[in-house]
Amino acid sequence: MLEGMTTKDSRAAGLARLAALAADETRAACLLALLDGRAWTAGELARHCGVAASTLSEHLGKLVAGGLLAEERQGRHRYVRLADARVAHLVEDLAAQVAPGAAERPRTLRQAGAGSAMARGRTCYDHLAGRLGIALTDALTARGLLRQDTGFALTDAGLRWFGAAGIDLDRRGRRPLARACLDWTERRPHLAGVAGAALCRHALRARWCVRIGSERAVKVTETGERALYDLLGIESEALR
Amino acid sequence: MLEGMTTKDSRAAGLARLAALAADETRAACLLALLDGRAWTAGELARHCGVAASTLSEHLGKLVAGGLLAEERQGRHRYVRLADARVAHLVEDLAAQVAPGAAERPRTLRQAGAGSAMARGRTCYDHLAGRLGIALTDALTARGLLRQDTGFALTDAGLRWFGAAGIDLDRRGRRPLARACLDWTERRPHLAGVAGAALCRHALRARWCVRIGSERAVKVTETGERALYDLLGIESEALR
DNA sequence: AAGCCGCTTCGATTCCGGTTGAATCCCGGA
DNA sequence: TCCGGGATTCAACCGGAATCGAAGCGGCTT
Image 1 (cartoon, each protein chain N blue to C red):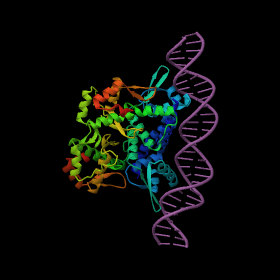
Image 2: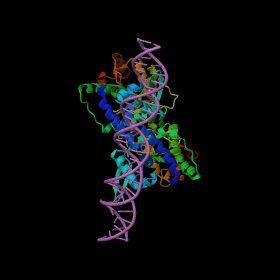
Image 3: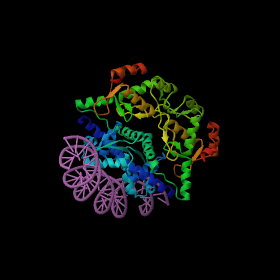
Image 4: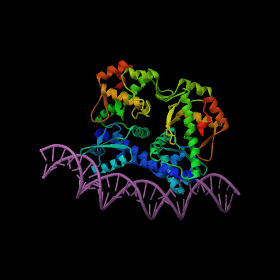
């Protein structure tokens, strides 16, 4: 009984303190916005969340102090981004747990347009998600490059494929090479981890896809359609 | 801008509502306690958390309403447990994110004893953790039954091993066969998912290990030591 | 140099939610 | 039928936290 108490309490207190950071709607909106992997200024976030700049400043202070956000000051701007991939993973998981309950349907045409652009393809922290992410993951799996039936890992053929495609995989860190990330539009797992990030970086650099608007959505280019078909046999219909 | 707002807001509100459930120290203590995978009565939890029964009753109401807990009423008792493996996974991840900051050391002998029993072996929801969990995971990996270098998945040899050992793997559900769960004493990933649960169930049924006390800790039996050595070449030193 | 703009600090206000004891409900045992 | 005990409801209290505007600070622009 007693022996566990102080330890338990400190663990519980830590968990509660961490959860409290996300337990405010404004801060939650920040975390979700920052899931695009980019750095936002305090002002952008304030406008995005619809609160006063002073309010948001206080929230950023808490999120940074809590280790969820990293900040970088440039002149009179304060840029913040998610602290690391671990935090991004955590936010993703929390968001995924929420999604099943909130089955939303678009109400206006513009909403539908924006929604389906996001559903077609977007970044999820540092990897690709949406139908584009799913199509990549499915294609890798169908070609025996990624194994999903017994867990989630690249195969040896998969390692060779990344090498042949000229996509470097940094295997030094302790971050897993391949990890499943649950998609909230498709409700299916897609490739994250070192390989997912490398694939996304390569896709943007080679202009297989480009960011559209100022949000997380991306659009596959014609170059990209050709490359995806040549390399993985992905039909462009799968991306519409 | 506007088109995303209502959607974003509802997602943010959902996330905030979910996080708020864990943002209270008493509720967090409940979630951590329930990580042992068993069902607790309201009274047990109240004593465990050191709050009045009425207080805990309200907390349980919220956790159940929020979908984190499942309840089962038997007579005048109210049993609660984590709703499902998804929730357990979420709590694990949150706890793991906290751990790095809270490097605690035991202060009394009894604490040290209890702590090291937990560190040797324990259940983590429905699979094995602690040094026992790590030893199993390492042994499976060393024998080529589990692949960790490119993700986290069983190999074909691994599938055969489970079959040969007479451990049934239910491959129908959408729950992954193998998943990494980060250990908070060892700071290393260990086997969770369907395979982890099946292995744990088999270990308890075959009395490779038994629960000690009323907590999550388990102890490897002599039968278990022999079986682990014969099946996976695990030296008993790795479990001390 | 003057002015603008982004951000932060501060104080005041408001409101939400955790806690408790007392009263009540309900089940099981005598 | 009556009691004991586990669990819940209720009303009241309290503390903490979110919010905002005003004022101040510091960098960038003209």
